[in-house]
Amino acid sequence: MAALFLTPMAVLVGGLVLVPIARSIVTSTTERHGQESVFVGLDNYLHLVGDDQFHTGVVNSFVFTAYAEIFKVVLGLAAALLLHHRRRGRAVLAGLLLVPWVVPTVVTAFSWRALLDPIFGSVNNLLTATGIGPLLVDLHLVDSWPAGWLSDPSLAMPSVILVNVWKGVPFFTVCFLAGLKAIPADLYEAATIDGASAWQRFANVTLPGLRHVITVTVTLSSIWTFNNFDLVWLLTQGGPGDVTAPYVLVAYSKAILQLQYGAGAAVTLVMLPVIGGLVFVLVRLLRQDSGAKLPRVRRTALRIGTRARKALPWVITAVVTGLLIWASPDIFWKAAVVLGVILLIAAAVGRVVSTLQSRGGRRASSTVSSLGSWVALAGLLFFVLGPLYWISVTAFKSEGQVVMRTDDLWPTPWTTEQFTALFANQPFGRWYLNTLLVSAASTAVALVCAALAGYALARLRFRGAQGFTVTVLLTYVMPGALLFIPLYQMLIGVRLTDSLWSLVVTYPTFTLPFATWLLVGYFSSIPVELEEAALVDGCTRLQAFGRVVLPLARPGLLAVALFTLTNAWNEFLFAFVFITKDEYKTLPVGMQSMIAGDVVPQGQLAAASLLVSIPVVIMYALGQRFLTEGLTAGAVKG
Image (cartoon, rainbow, N blue to C red; front, side, top):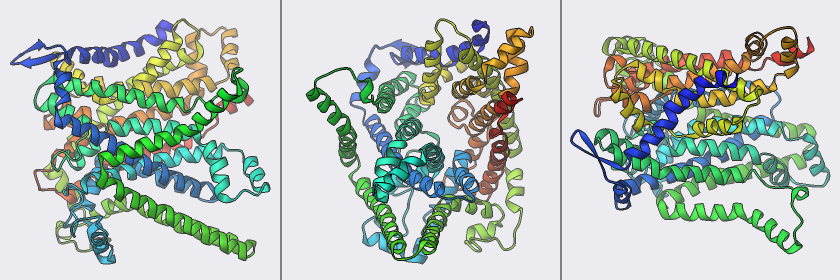
């Protein structure tokens, strides 16, 4: 029975993940000469030692990930604390903050490219009007004004980091908010009775309570950020020069542009241990043994071990800080200034609120706290929703308003000129249909295979279950950068490139593992007594699965469908590599092809971004209601 349920999953994971990895290892030992590949052993790896492009890509990936994660943790935690203390409107605010994470990456990239444009961008205009722009020059944060955020070598990487932070903060906020809800209120009450200040409660109650959530969130986000390709490519294509090119772009350049598959495969495989080490170190932080579980050791050894565990975060912080100073001294002090300003403002606001609360009564203190919270939330919402608002209004401007920068914040009059031009000048309808077909087909495949495999791993007891589960988790964190080269070779071999089937076949590599992982938890939460009752009544295992388990797992199935459909809808790397003909392009790749050199049709891209984002936002808005239904609890009560 386990073999029956697991076979579809095993075939897809084996054929689309494990076999490509093995093939990538073999490919990395070859070099292409004409139409043939010649075995060269470890030469491709040895050449990387003196490859300046590879060295730059590795440093860029590390710098990009480190700075982005630091700011996402700080801003995400601040936003979560603000929302956690609100009693009204918390769900609505959390939904609004989640929008940047939901919208496709191509929309994120094009909206920020337009905002950061040195001549037509609203960021430079706003900073000039407020007098902040010249002040940035005086503080040596920028070299000249107006600033070329994506074209200046000293500003390109900080700008890309800013956009990644903007897109990633909502994910951190939602995760931290869930973690804050799980911290018992009794701990805060006890700390308050003991005389702990707000900072002491935060340091000794909140942070320890969020340790597991922070570790898991940073782990997943670091892997995604370290292997990011689409956002960097859509913003800067690795330029100017190679100052923003991550290692994934180096692998793409070698394998796809230069047709040196061995060299490109070597780049991705060299970085795989780095990703594995990142996962290992962060997961190890979760395993802090309690005193009751420690074996009997001498007091001296126990003290040394305790001190070492306490000192480990500081050691890691010092090492990462030293590496950041060495790798990017210009970015480091700019980031330190920005982060310092954020922390100083937060500390000053907290001090003022605390002083006013101590001097005023309960009503006054409540009013001050509420006012400060609303001001902070307003600033956060402005940062999060500002680019999306700009995209929305730009889509309804005339071409003259877009070019002349008139009626920047409110079109006068509103027009659908950009939508008409979009469908007239581009095969946008065809791209939309392609994306819809590929997303629906890959979601259906992932849903069926994940439901069968998730049920087997949650309910059936068989030899090798733990190993299969570990394999699923490993394939989930496996970066697409490691797979796109061998998958591209495989698709060429079976002549599936420039075909929608190439995407339908390969998209389960990143949708199926997550879907299985999610459904294992949902199936495990369903009371086993319901299935046992069905089996006693004469149902077979398949009948119990279809008639009892699947109906109760509808929230889980909906969540899987929602996530897989969104990921397939937004996917860029595979579609960018596997598809070159216009009639087979999906929306992200098609929108990217609308830019011809320095000619950027901002109005048409804004209209396209709006049409691409609307289905995803609607799906999440409708899906939230079903995700919170207590179907299992209702069945048990019945």
